[in-house]
Image (cartoon, rainbow, N blue to C red):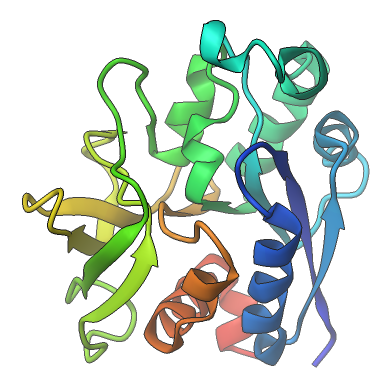
Length: 231
């Protein structure tokens, strides 16, 4: 079977995205997927128009960075996609591309409302939040590809009160001591002719590599890329 290519766009503050993306690449490797990391978000998005990958993964924290808290980082880390980059990403997904959003992907591109529409949900400043890293109990939903997957625990950030489209299919719910009310942490979605999976877990490589979490990620990518399932 020919190798499939996965473009992982990384970068941003407060996370070791390089390490986490490398762990994700290892998780996907048994599916015949070869991953390439790109830190230049603008260049990566623009490349979708001429060199679309089999799978696009956004594993980054790139947004406007408004507010005094982010003053030290804004000059080097703030990012808003150009009109051309927005068009390239939108066309890629809606025309049939496969998109995997990991963890902070829902915070990216906060000044571009359509991003949340493509992803199936988004972080809402003033509403969404997460406790510090803690043990998060994850319960895969029976609607996921392998309904026999058992509950598992990871040390992660539990994203809470995200704005989630009613059109998504939730693949996993999670709760913690700090957030006893179950939150959707993984979903799949079909915007246009595309396929999208978002996984709000994955703060670091340990979370990505946790055995059941890794299997859930592989199963979700099998749904994103039917050619994986059918060889």
